[in-house]
Length: 389
Ligand SMILES: *Cc1c(COP(=O)(O)O)cnc(C)c1O
Image: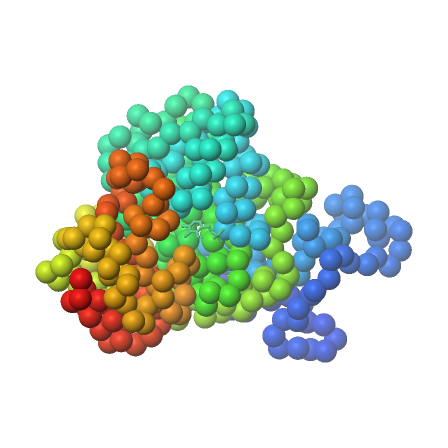
């Protein structure tokens, strides 16, 4: 019987050394030795799978990649120093001058910057489709479209994109489907099972889950990953062995952590949904979510992010943050500690109101990354902060 992905991820590890350690040791080495010239020649000629240099591969990094592959049901992968370097490498290795990248309108801020400010410099076109208007997706595909890049749930608006529908379109037009699965995590959603070719992650978020290290990973079809590997081994966004070791241990508890994050988030969403100071609230597993049916079809958990709109707009958003006593005000998400953010006055403050609305950032939008504190304490802090607005 084949093992469940969660078991496989926990049980996949580097070969034991002579010490017979139970947990994987840390291979803090930049390079690896060979016994003789012939072995070195054969390794450089790709005739062995020995490690050469930690920019190319390292046992801790490979263990982390193998575990993510087990969780995502992927053939191969490559881990990078941050989520953004995984996203960037997937673009650089697979797109060229004259190609078109089609993306959903709500994507992570730095990804948006790479797509709109850098890709055009290299002659790569882009356009966005509305995540919540599936009828418009097919017409957005152009003859030179090479890749469709999406996030689902989207950040920070939590729109859900139907993965089966978008992957059917990608197949029909022979386009690579690349999915940022950071918000759902592989224990909440497996895009490859639904037809995605590549999955990218910021491992900095839920995968580590404790706000300690940066990391990223891209997994998927072997031939695509090979091209990404060739780009990365030469351009150098390698994940450090130490960070890989931290992330690899973190994956052993991903499933149990996400279960609690999600149950806390669902309880919080239910408590706040009809609050008089909130005009709307979104959580993928609340029946009131506009794409609830798709969420429950393709996700096994609603994840740990809840977002809502304060009736008082921009000023209320700022006041809400100031009133919080326990929740952290910080740029991260996916931590044991709950985090509140108000994109309109922070991450997206430089945009005009019109630009913000184009990416679904409304003036009073609050995003909560629900932590592992007791739900009563999380809810109480938010309720008292709402009370004082
Ligand atoms: C944080 C994040 C990224 C970027 O990851 P870093 O590790 O910060 O580089 C990409 N996508 C999403 C959805 C994120 O939340």
